[in-house]
Image (cartoon, rainbow, N blue to C red; front, side, top):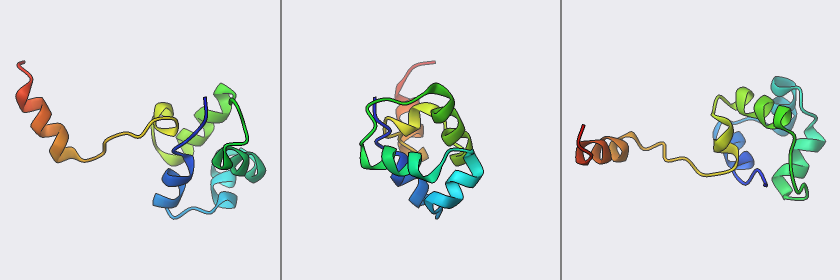
Length: 81
């Protein structure tokens, strides 16, 4: 599984690859390889380190998450409690 959202999340936080590498402990070359899609899989500890440094759950690295709270509120109002 590829980290399809890594670059978008990094750029949203105005981080360079080197800055993310420093925060996560993952090399900037590894981050680059994941962003370019040249890595077929990833180790759990790598994804956990990157997610932690970006402040997102691990699944956010692989799948786009809806962060629009107004949509989430509207949906929760439709679902009976």
